[in-house]
Image 1 (cartoon, rainbow, N blue to C red):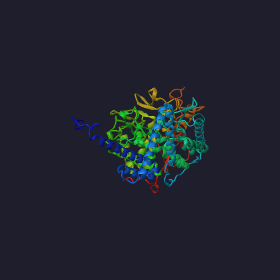
Image 2 (image 1 turned 180 degrees about the vertical axis):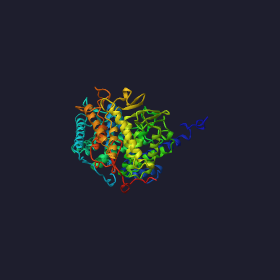
Image 3 (image 1 turned 30 degrees about the vertical axis):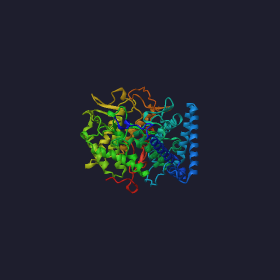
Image 4 (image 1 turned 60 degrees about the horizontal axis):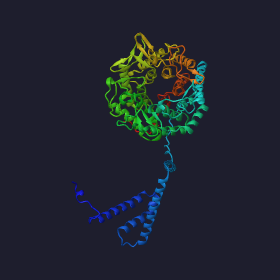
Length: 605
């Protein structure tokens, strides 16, 4: 039996009165000091002498402060009475009244906090990188100018329709003529199309439309909403779009909004490995991964497509956290074993292990490789680590994924469960442009080889368009059973206004000036105008092999950000957005090259 229970301090026991007295005394002292610490700041100092004096009075009855002791006791008694009275009144109130009172108190606290909060810290002044060729670029040939004017008109139709029917919503349903949103943006109206289209409007000289977009952003774009968003999509569309708009126009609001949003994405990196979650709640900061991703994994293209924007965020804010987050990802990947030198598309952010061994230069993998090359270009070719990682990855891709079909078409397959699937996605068609962009600076004098590889991919992707009824490319196309560059499954026959093929045409045009790229781009522009244009904007189509296609009724934000921008640049002169000064993010948002002379980044050893 515990000793304490053998001889308990019973009220008749001789130790009991002293024990109770000590208990009361210690409780009272605790109450005094508790009261002291819970007093408002300004009253603490005022009442400290009284409280301390009272403590000594209580502990020493012979102290000379009896009158003060009495008045202080009376005050405490009165306070006690008042508290009891308030408690009784509270008990008489209904639940609704109490809830209303609590809400009022909450609101008051929030208001007080708002008054105290002086808002975000001002950003440090940093030099604006030298930007060149942000407007004009009018081609000297009248027929090319005519085509460029047509692309601008298409942009105006897409924008005006969104302005009229979907303003403030993320995207537009051009047939239903109302707003639309997908789960990548959460459930909030964040105006994705506005942010995504800004730089295209600016480059095209549509300045009135640009000002409308800027005004909406100043007045309505709020990232404090309870919305679970895709970290990757929000980074490439919103942060990329806002940064590009800032660098093109010099308007501070875009920089400030980009930084506000970036801060909301940082909690996504709170994982055991530092590999970010796919989604994050903008309000709570809680992150998670897509339910469909292999064993709770993060996706290579998503966590590998942050570098460009995050380096610019560190440059503009002076906060090294952004740069450190993306460099940590790169260092972690460098330490890992890669099957056949290839990067699998899935990585578990808890364990730091690869998920299933599926490698693709299309969806799930694509922009990871693109950003390795572009990190090097954006650093004014000083980030040699990024270039080396890119070169090694491309060498493994060429060895294991790139093949020639029986009909002589070069394609990029997908590595799945130890074998090559002879299928290429529309998304992988961007790689033609990437190979051309990375040709200069490639090892072992292989520049000519990579430019040729880019041309072959461009040709294959053009064939995927040319072999359809609508002259628009399917989502994915096969190279087996006698079928080449043709979609087989019904769920791969759709075209959702994607830009990747036109992106490759533009890069190939810039590096070769072969007129066929402008010809192919014009074919695509005409097909989009003929089959995707409706009175309320532009819509994707469900079957590119059907002469009577049905619409999907979505005008994607990337149609304005990428497809129309690349078409416009294709029919502009090379002095518009020169590639020596600008690097385009994966959503076609141009960010300036950061020369060593004006950079504040930690040096990469």
